Length: 84
Image (cartoon, rainbow, N blue to C red):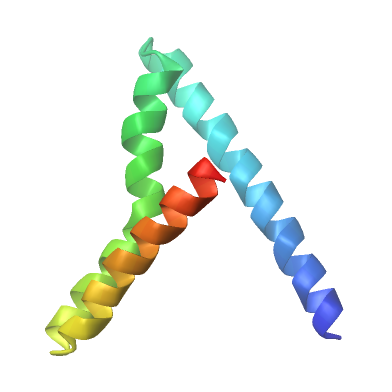
């Protein structure tokens, strides 16, 4: 059953990623803005929003260590995933 959930989650992730990219391309075409600019602004904000919400929530609940860990972990993951 766990494998089924993992496959379902992966499928949803791939479909949502595809929708995000198609939406960003449509926004760039409608606004007449290069796709690079849209990807560097709108897509970047959208993908960083969950991390921002976790950090703000942690600070509001007086657990700043979670916020620091979130920032450090996110940056490490981004560097390792981008650089391979």
